[in-house]
Length: 121
Image (tube, rainbow, N blue to C red; front, top):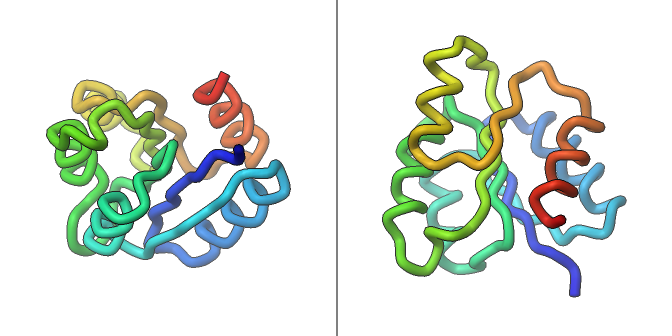
């Protein structure tokens, strides 16, 4: 059974790149343009993995991560933070709120694919 991944990023180019690359690897991808839409998709689709940006309109990635970790249906879902914020404090904030991995932009698609493979074992 193919794994379902939710990609949330307010940059359409990033969503398209991730969607295309991950679908070529056999994953089923759903995507959202902001955290508010992403939260609805999380609740409705219950994906196997969340890849989310941090800086987004509406609910930002850290707030979304907190909501995921507090939700009994979603709390164990792996989360990869994908963001332009590369300062140590930002990375520590993402990890301390429960992110499983933190990838900084600009990123290579190989890094994302390898991280997803690591998550799924």
